[in-house]
Image 1 (cartoon, helix red, strand yellow):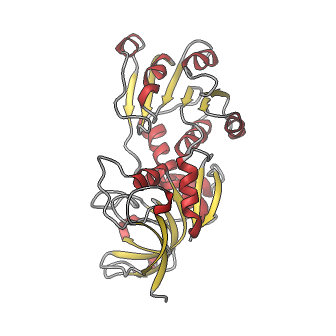
Image 2: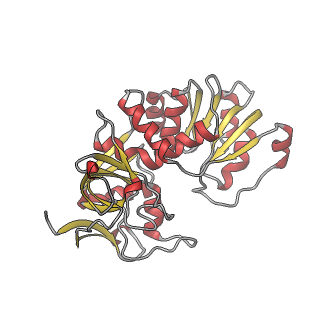
Image 3: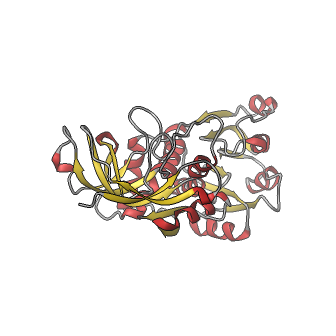
Length: 331
């Protein structure tokens, strides 16, 4: 086995030029760890945040980005059952001691990664590496938010903000899987067309309707939506409240446009709105997503597949919001 590997390394915060193709030693699995040959790595907007740096997140340098990883177990450390050898796996992105692959520890933009055996999730037959690498963070987050926390039901009207990104696309797919009527908000006519192909019943274009609450209210039959999915935050929060039906639920798993969101308390009490937070994903969410793909019920939306040396280009597509669905890198 080779002793060195190619990696995409970030040595300091900055622009895309800071993501460098380098050669590093292949890690050795310690006790309780497995060595995984990376076959596919999914990118997320998290990688943009890591690139530029966030005030509330210290990044130890150098850092290998990439939180969604799929590959093959090639070696195991002491205490790890040898029957993991040769198995195809997706990685649970959270470290057992806390933190996330690519943020608090090295991620999957490399040829090999050593991880705790508790992060291994076997990939079912019929699921390819690229599909498996598209699922953990975006689809796992959406699965928990919609089904575990949001209790989405058939026949409900569901609003999805930011519907053309990784989490947004997966929310549209899961809402349609559940039998909901979906109103999807996006920023362009082309993205709207793709969302309709995924099953969205109504499209609202932010560029044409900065106050999206008016067209959403009209699309809902002037009754409001039962569920609104808002992981944008910022100045989208009050318009989202205006969209709600009585006894509606606002689901949130993030705040990409700002953490501090104004609330018009009148909508909360007058329409009896529930605001439901959802904190990422659990292993069972990722296992459920893999099973949906194996059963033919779910096809992850992958727009771009790039080789490792072009990973910075993929991060750029996310940064410029020029992507629909997922970007996958093949080392």
